[in-house]
Amino acid sequence: MRANWRLKLSVLAGASALAVSVVTVTPALADDAPGGLQEVQMPADVEILEGVAPAPETAVPFTGAGPKAAAASHACLGSTSVYGARGCFQHSGDIVWARDTEKDGMSAAIGVYTDYGRPAAVCINRLGADTWATCNKDYREDGKVRLRVMRYDGGNGKFYQPETWSGWIPVDGQY
Image 1: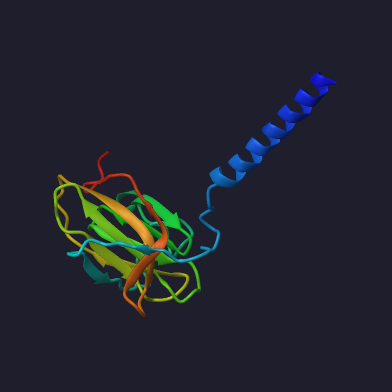
Image 2: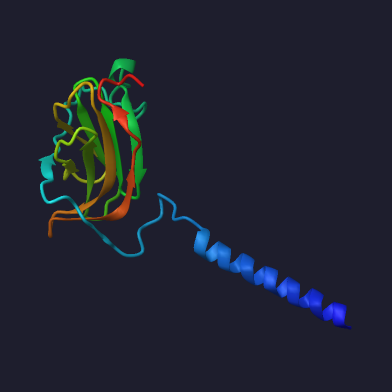
């Protein structure tokens, strides 16, 4: 009788632990809509860059994402995405690409940070859902950049999660 009680108790404890771990450890998927917006704090000296639409003949750095695929020298590095936004860095020309992937009234925002102390900049795509925008900056060829992909609300000028970071990307494209 006593062994049966211990068996039931251990099964119940194991099931409870499994339920708690599933609830607390399950990550949010990038394609899931955010449950609530949380503001992202940006450095006070961040430079806001308005993204522009690439020319119709421009090679988009992702196969199948535009008029023609980009050559290897124009490859986009550090491709990073979250719900509603996708970004990457094209080392040939130091171009930041920002794609708004959701029709939700917000914009894609791609923050760019350097490893050599240059103030952060953010490329914002206000062109609407399913569009690419580019921001052209000149970075030190011996430096590295890191991308921070997030959402932007132009109505209040604030940045929001979900957000994610790329790894460090060499500006010259040489890993």
